[in-house]
Length: 593
Image 1 (cartoon, helix red, strand yellow):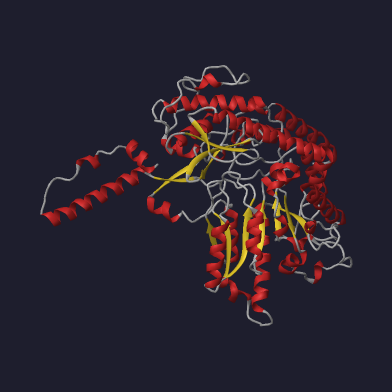
Image 2 (tube, helix red, strand yellow; image 1 turned 180 degrees about the horizontal axis):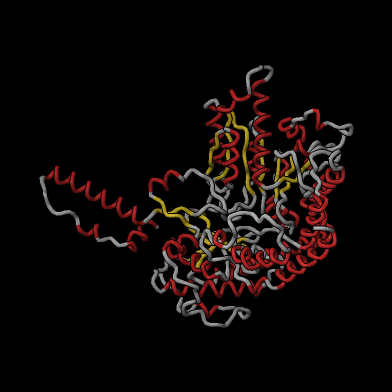
């Protein structure tokens, strides 16, 4: 493809993107296809000869797009936002066109220096402590753009591990690996699974600390666990506090956690704010950033809540020398005469680095801090609107504290009907949501994600949710003394007036297999369920539930064994208890809840 062809086809792609964005509501939010659909549509081998761009773009629309989940759809309420905007896309286009691999200042001075400047802009906009800002007087800190929050956590943990081992080994020549069994990290049960993955990769222990009813790490249990481990001869070296947990957007108390961490010199405190950390751009949200002065590192993702497309995750550290000493590998062929320039290859895992700062620079310049604040406040207001609608209907409940854009709700029933509700929502293709376990209960996560989201999107979604719920609640008992005679009587003047009774349109029958798939649940045995209880969760892992058939079999075996022992004891040869054998799937579903 030559320049003129690129000019022509590039305009066609831009036109396609504009049309896609303008008409995205005409598409289903997510596909209901079965796995393996694309293999049937594409050849097994790559083409030997060139094909026309027209054919490629047509195949993209006809074959690829039907399998796409549209994360920037007005009715996409799943996970957290996938930050995206036209300024960011344009900045990324220029980055791709330049093709710079900015591992050092010498490899691309503009990429290195712009990253430093943008990270300082970002830190100041969020109101971060001056210790994290490169150009603040007396600061030894700074930041870098990583690929994901998982990378940020891993890099911070590796840096903390290196610092702890250096303190333990002193002047000895013992290999670092000797000290690994002694190290232990801590995170809340509501922390992201990337923390658990990082500890596995770093070969260190992880202790999971229970959360309170609001989803916040219990500081008293953290302090107790650290003291117990110190008494046992272990070395606490890493604590992760979370601001904006995946399950319920809970905010750990950084100040109190920081005070505990300061009591043990070997502890590195990392604060993970992948989603909610961006909200600190709002002065009114900085009540949750109090205590960051105790943190050794902090991360947040502009590719979640700052309109910057993936990948872009910002990591700041209090002392960059700790980071560089842990990750510095400086072979001769990478050295250059301008060693005073920043070499960001020492700030993360990969050597090669994209020019990520360019798209973030575009976003800050085109929107300005005020524009970004307006965008986040709109998400917050719409989430509060949805929370109000849910709370006004006694058939539903909100399970989390709504501070930002996430509302965790459920019907006041057992878990199984809520599985069905989410499955029906997602199977319709008209909305997309995901579940979580919050305070031990299955909840449906409703997160405002669309850049231009408005009240109509929220009202339409609530109306559809109630339609599905009406059908489910005909056959399920509420967990309250009595359901309201007419929840619609309390409808606000701005709510849709269409009746909610009747069966909503569903494309095809929702089988048990599809119900599990579209409710993001996975049915396993009780033994497997118990073995998984000590793992951290995330927004992608299915919610594990006990298989009712397995549960029934366990009941049956227990009953038969009980009766056998009683027969031996009493010499009784009475018939087996027939009642247990007649337990239905519905009965065991209730038992599993």
